[in-house]
Image 1 (cartoon, rainbow, N blue to C red):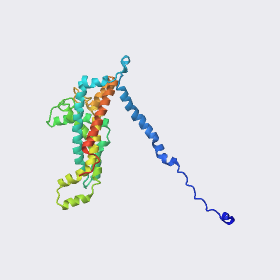
Image 2 (cartoon, rainbow, N blue to C red; image 1 turned 120 degrees about the horizontal axis):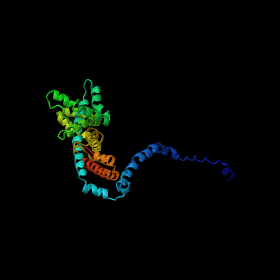
Image 3 (cartoon, one colour; image 1 turned 60 degrees about the vertical axis):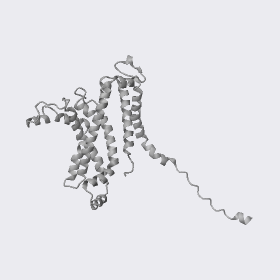
Image 4 (cartoon, helix red, strand yellow; image 1 turned 120 degrees about the vertical axis):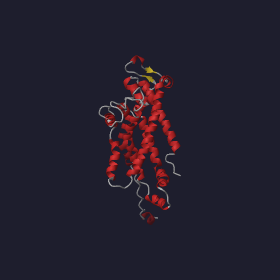
Length: 311
């Protein structure tokens, strides 16, 4: 017994140190300031809009301010024909702009994806309009459309059209003029995203298709387009939202005129809040626009099967 007790006991295994929780929380602590700023600059304004949409709020008429319930929304759908006019024009504007920008952007991406002399310069020229701000783009096209010093003046010198023609004040040409101005800046957006996705297409697929005797069109239809599916869906959705909310270009070019021909729903909201100071009604219009965009985005993503496997 004494000898057994004298035998030294084997040392106990070292206790595992409890992992510190600080390293695991460090990434969240690092992004916390940015998250709080985003919460303050995004979440608070959104909540404020929903709140004021239920109010009568006009700083110039404080005696009328107060809780309005759903009166603003009833007024939108039953008493405001301008809402429907601007909504229809917004849909037309988005459909035409996004469709043309996608078409020309895809064509440009396919061109600059080829190997040719001066390709780097060509890509820079194609993408450069996207770096120009919306206000500066509007200023450029206002000068180009000027009836005294712009394009119409030089066309008149060539015998095309007449002097003093203002495309932005004519109801028959103002829409086309605005579309061209926005195309100049919007097409590079599609070209950039589509070109980035084109770079990841395997060359072996095209080589195998050529061996099988597939034409250029069949290669484009069965290889290129399926590969670009998600990029096209995402870019068209993003651009549709941006075009729907387009205010700066149309406001600078036409101000919504002539005779309200180019007034989109966001521009109508801006005029209602800034010019008429009716912030309660403008907030209700903004809420309706938000719901419309959310619903259309969900439906579009469901119908397009974004992220699904290509068959």
